[in-house]
Length: 135
Image (cartoon, rainbow, N blue to C red; front, side, top):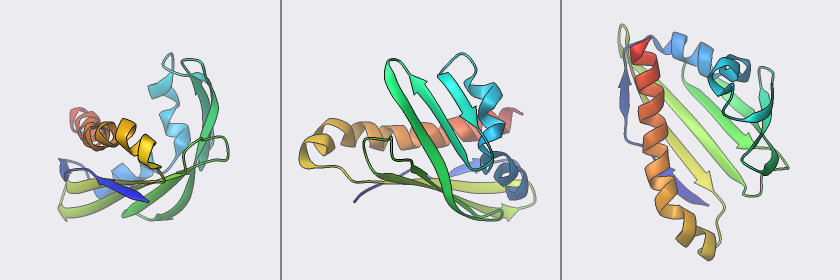
């Protein structure tokens, strides 16, 4: 498994508030409207189609309240991966977050996707932090 870790970002919210939103895929419904097709979600799983790509799904495989959320792809995802969100409240209304992605990539896929995953994990962390800090 190849590991890609984001930088640590700061979110000016309680860890509990962040966790309560990110640990339930149903909360993403308004965010993905018009961006993906065939969106379906419940608390612990979601599925969708995107730009001609067949349906794929994600599922929460483990979580520790206000601390971690571990996500994996379902059987329709072509690359086995794990995404791990870590939250640590360091002061009232100050939470540090880091995202780690572990993906099973062969040499060719690593050459094609490795750099994009490195950049993408930071972009994802920045995007989550920006969304929470703007709210």
